[in-house]
Amino acid sequence: MPAELLSALQGTTLVLTVSDPSARNALSPQVYAAGVEALQTAESSRDIRCVVLRGDGAHFCAGGDLQRLRATRLREDGADAQRASIDRFHALVEAIAACPKPVIAAVEGWAAGGGCSLALACDLIVAADDARFVMSYGRIGLSPDGGGSWQLAQRLPRALALQLLWLAEPADAAQMQRWGLVNQVVPAGEALPQALQLAERLAQMAPNALASVKELVAAAPARGLSAHLADERGHFVANLFHPNGLEGLQAFLDKRRARFD
Image 1 (cartoon, rainbow, N blue to C red):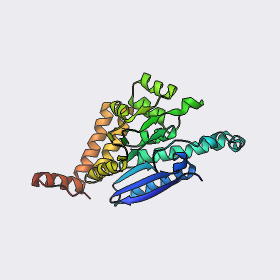
Image 2: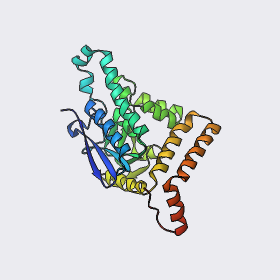
Image 3: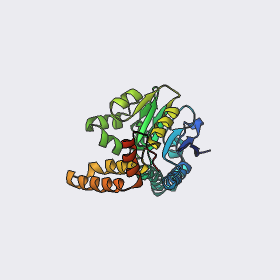
Image 4: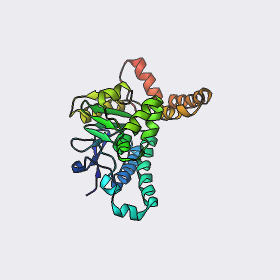
């Protein structure tokens, strides 16, 4: 039975769990479709402030189903069918990027191949100290999907990105943190609780300002300073005249915690 995506609301955080522990939560079309739908729900819901993505059991996600990829049926269906499958995966990655709410990966165990790409697509990563990340495509004669090569090329020196992609060398959570790819390293079994604590901290902040920051940071690498300054000005003014801007300023002057809507 292919992996399914379970969803549960914990306070103001939507927890999405990729669930197929027997296959280390290998990805499936059902996960892609359900993930896009869940993120759209999170975007439109005032009650959801953050999203946490995790794997069921001991591992985050083993990536694609290799048995399916080598199956005769897939070869018979042809390249167009596989392109469509990858497009569904990429729709999930793009939904994470487009979601105005923070999306946090809580990683235990292995995040491999497409699972590593999926973790890197999230805004923040909380990883157990025994977690392992690997872009494993090179071991099986494949190139990446899920935006993994884009994420590494954007965030690491070129030679290091190529090393990780070509040699498929696993990296532990501490190394990923030194490279700036993981935000927090926590004891094994604590990735979800710590991710929920981080989500709760973010939930206390102004959602409109969080969305602005996510949009600005995403756009920055592709444009010059002048264009970015103009966009910063637009976001700043919009957030200043938002009710949350007034509440934040008043709370600071009153020396109390702001109550953002």
